[in-house]
Length: 477
Image 1: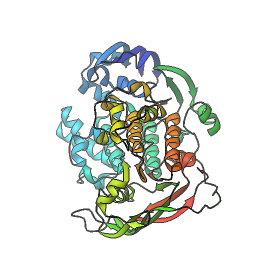
Image 2: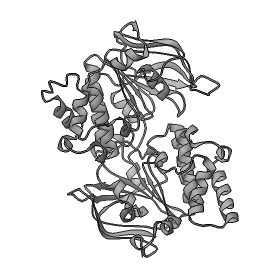
Image 3: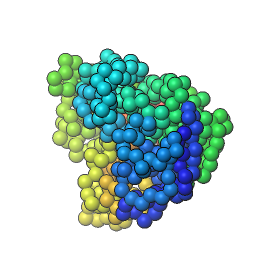
Image 4: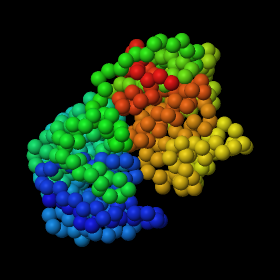
């Protein structure tokens, strides 16, 4: 059993408590979802339950976390890792080696397991998650789903009884999300205890025994899994939570004739050293005022296409036109803004406010636009905070707002709702509607069906480096 007793935690340098007087007990073999808004304490609780607090995160901790009656604060991290495993939102942040088999072996080697026992565990873990064929592959060549399975296998090889997972589905396409569910189901059948901090809970229907909702550092509600998932999407939206059921389809709105702002024809691209094209004649068209969802499995070419359209990659063949004129890569860099999935790579200044001023179309005349954007993304109170001190969702919103500040003709986003709660997902949608309402074209690479329904006007699906025919959605600006 794992439990928390009067658990509180405050991060070093912060005035408020991230957790306050949290009490919970999770029985062996139970699956518990930690739900609730961003900043509610889910990730902090996950760090506490996995031992990263107090052994890694600096701050003030009160209360206890007990695993089989022993306080994790009294155990060394290598000892904790044998009983409690952790999987976080971005698998790459947990990689220590460059090869799949080495990654699965890493924890066992550090635990000092005998060689023969370690080899048996590695083989079993690779087979268990169906990645034995990847054992010699470099981690840099893996898809998002394959990276997630590699981390799951590495944790499995350590043999923990308790699994703590923080937003494990955030970067996965629907097929990989279903694979994740199958993995979690099989772990539960083995008697493993699962604690999953998650916004998008729909894939956990029928798997969760209980759902705990956190807000402002406290557990404010506990529900049985069946009762939680019986609630409709409208009810979940009113409570500020993500949908429990994905929409089955979209109702096309009346067709509108729009001025074409972005178009690609026959676009091709090949990565250095590869024997085939990652993009194979990709064609698309985006009109003024449109918000187009670019869908497709991990590895279909969505990010590659985004990098080409905005000029960060140079095409091998084909052309890109903006406002009817063919544009070279260096011209597209000036006319487009791209927000990548990992926002850390796009934050450069010492405060959130300065980050927005860096992107303003007219830096010399702010006229309050910077603070307006910060308020619009819910970061008005953090104007003077360092961007790198913000949460993952806050960094994502800041990067998008900085791109919007430049008022670009073309705005391209790669998974902008990864890790966002319901309120901030809708806030992101409103920002994109504003950008499109000014006559810009917005292209969003996303797996998030709820977000597509919220704000997108059309979908385009990618497969094997090509763009298939688009479909109108039920949302209009």
